[in-house]
Length: 380
Image 1 (tube, rainbow, N blue to C red):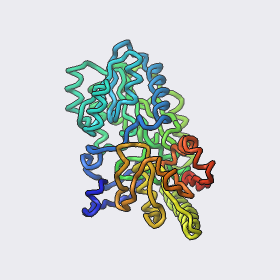
Image 2 (cartoon, one colour):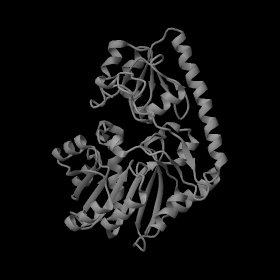
Image 3 (spheres, rainbow, N blue to C red):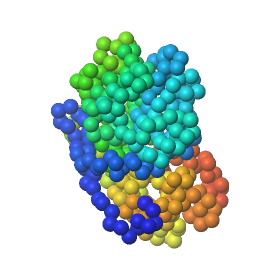
C-alpha cells in the first residue's frame, strides 16, 4: 500500500482452509473480488532470475511435448509481464497474453509481447478462437489456483485448444505444502490447493484428461499439470499414477493429515518467533528480505510485526516505497542493507533464499546473518 493510504481503514477477510471429504480438494471458502486482488498487481516474473530460467526450461519442455507447427498460437492466461511467452516467441510461435493487471499488461505489449487486459472467460475464449484460430498450447501458471470459476476457465480452454493441443499449468502443490509446512502459500489470491486426485476427477468431468502430473521445484514445490481434450492423441504418462500413489501414502485424502499440518505450523511459529524475540532482546536489528504476498500470512500468523522487523527489502521497483498490508512496514531497495546495516535479514521470499543469499554475499561477509523461516528455521 502507498504512504497516502496508511491512515485509511483496510478491509480484512477470513483466511480459513477447508478440506472436502468427498473428493479431497482443499480450498478457501471466502472469496475476495479478483478485481481488488489483481487489477493493481505489483508482482512481475521478470525480476527473478531464478524464475526466468525456470520459464525458459518450462517452455522448452512444452514445445518438445506438444511439437507444434511453426507460427502456431500459444496463449498464456495470467501472463504477467510476458516472461514465459517471450521464450515461445523466440522459438518462432505466435503468442498472446491475457492478464487483468492493466499497467503490467500494457508494459508487456509495449515490450513486444501482445497482451489483452482482462480476465480469461469462456466468452473471451470463443472470440479468440474466431479471431486467431486454435491454440496449440494454452498455459496458466501460478494462476489456476487463483480462480473461483475453474469450470468456466476449463470450458474456455476447451474452446480455444486445437484438437491435439495441450493445456499446461503450474500451481503450488498440496503435497509439498503439507510435507514442508509451507503454510504461508495460503493467502487470498490462492483459492485452491491442488493435488492430483481431485484434478483427475475434475478434468474428466469437464471434457478433458490429465495426462501428466509432475513435481517441480518452483515456489517451494509445485505441481505441473498437463491436460488434453478428452480423446486426445497422447497416452497419460506414468507421472499421474505415480503421484496418485504417493498422495495416498501421504494421506492427502484424510482430514487428520491437515490437523497434524496445523500442529506443525504452531511448532515452527514457536521456534521462529522465539528466536526473533531473543535477538531483539539482545539489541539486534532485524529486517525482512522479499515482499511477496505470502509474507503477510507468515508475519500475521507468527506475530512478526514492526516491533520486530524494521523494514523489508524487495528488488522490484514496483514495491519499493510502499508498505506491507496491515502491518505498515516500509518496503525499500537493497541499498538499505549497506545504509542501515541490520544484523539479521529474515528471508520472507524463502523460495528464492539461495539466490538472495548468493546475491547479497557482502552482507554475510560483513557479519550479517540470514534467517530462512521455511521449510525449516535456519540461521545462515
